[in-house]
Picture (tube, rainbow, N blue to C red):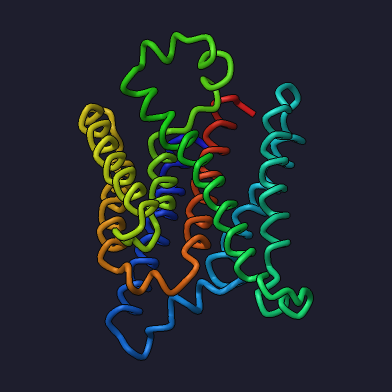
Length: 266
């Protein structure tokens, strides 16, 4: 598969599911008979988490195929297998819903403790995603010479740095939340999201002679999505939006893995 085909396939996938999400949010917001549509899709083991598992399992199969096909550079194939397998395992282990856990563990403060643990886990995942897939690519673009010539970048990051399209997909997943300006965490996320959307626009403008149609389309989807998430905070606050974020992270991760595999000629 060529780089152009990878960009086309994943950009179209991103477009389809982003539009599907927009329609779902709008339907839940304005049609009373479908006000629980988003909640149904966000339940444990529901639509978005199931699609995430399918994508991650595809990544496991792909990494095995790459390992068997490649005769020289097998390390990245093993690395991909480890990442996808770990994510898939955690996803399956988290399938038990709160009611089942309540029956298994009868501790009065379990739910409060579980909420705290889940929040910490989400913050850790979001932080790792933000630093590697969003922050580092932006810094690399604006400080090309200083970053590209550094020993650390040349040794550890040059071959596995995410593309602009990958970063857009991850930022889209990162920006999915119910924004409440009474919450400091939400305000910080709002500032980060709007700042990096502006930076991506700046990068796209600087690369206007070489940027692809799919990148422009993905940036427009990111902007439209961010506006919809802002305007639909009340509807979004009713469900566990992290399942949607994980789904778009899965698209971005598989896109990144294929791009790097192609770059390394695995």
